Amino acid sequence: MQNFHGKPGKDVIADIAPVGSYKPNGYKLFDMAGNVWEWVSDWFSATYYAESLKEPPIRDPQGPARQVNGKWHIRRGGSYDSDPKKHLRISYREPGPSGNNVGFRCLVPNTPEATKNFVN
Image (cartoon, rainbow, N blue to C red; front, side, top):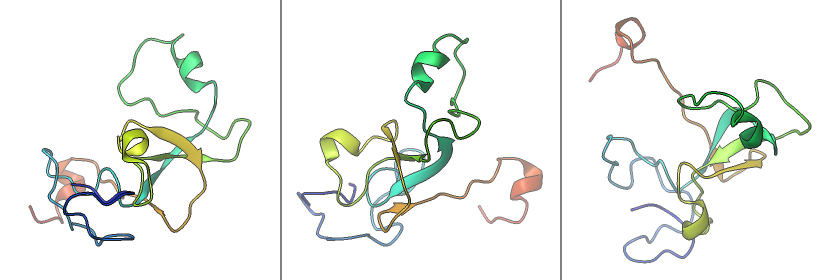
C-alpha cells in the first residue's frame, strides 16, 4: 500500500506518513512510491530520451551530466497528493523543484568497506 491522493482502502493518512508506515516492497525497501516525491540528482532535459536512443543501452541512465536548458532536477514516484494512475511508479519522472512533498533517499554502495558500520 502507498500513501497517495484519494485515500482508498486502509490508507487513512491525509498528509506525509512516517517512514515505514506501510509494508516494504519485494526488495525490502520502504516508501518507493507515494508519500513524497523522490528528488534525484539527474537534471531534466526534454530531449534526453531521444538523445539517449543514439547510444548503446545502459543500465540506470543518469540523465544529463549537468544542467541543460533548464533549472529542474528530476522527481520520481509521486507523493501523498499525486494521481496514483499517473505518478505512482518509480519509473515515472518529471522535472520539478523541491518542496514540502519532496524528499530524497541517501544511498550507500553495497560494498564491505561502505557497509561495515551498518547492522543487517
